[in-house]
Image 1 (tube, rainbow, N blue to C red):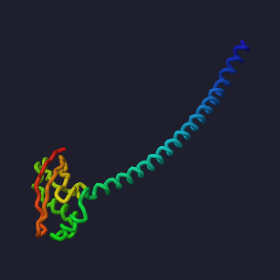
Image 2 (image 1 turned 180 degrees about the vertical axis):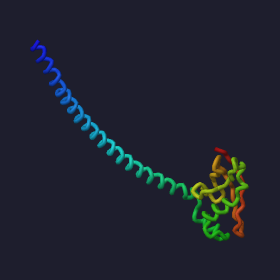
Image 3 (image 1 turned 90 degrees about the horizontal axis):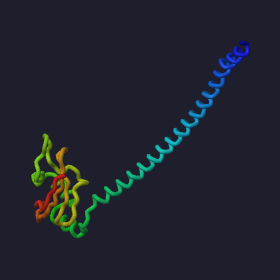
Image 4 (image 1 turned 90 degrees about the vertical axis):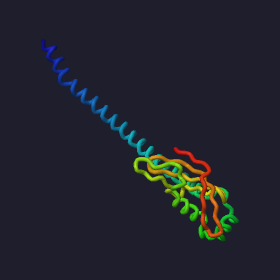
Length: 164
């Protein structure tokens, strides 16, 4: 019986210490793994920020390219200036924004159709413009023909349109 008692004593006193030691080792190992995962997370965040900045630069570059006319020559610009436009590209955009009646769709849900953004009005040639329109709910594109008369007045004609 005393042998059984000593075995039971050993089991009840030694096993908790062994289990405590195992749990401490597991805790230390899990902390190391957490630290490693935190490092990987920080590296991924840094890489993501770097990629984001690179993409923003590329987007800005592309937007800048899109704002330039595709085929408007210096001769065309000078001709329009001689007809009274001081800054032909901006004058064309500003005039078009005043003519929301050219948009072949009505606004919905209280929205008002318009050409709201300069960056979405592309002067393609000395006769054609591609413009994006919207009312805050629906949108579309319109191809327009324009003419600048001798007095510097701009007339517009819708060639084609598409609603998004």
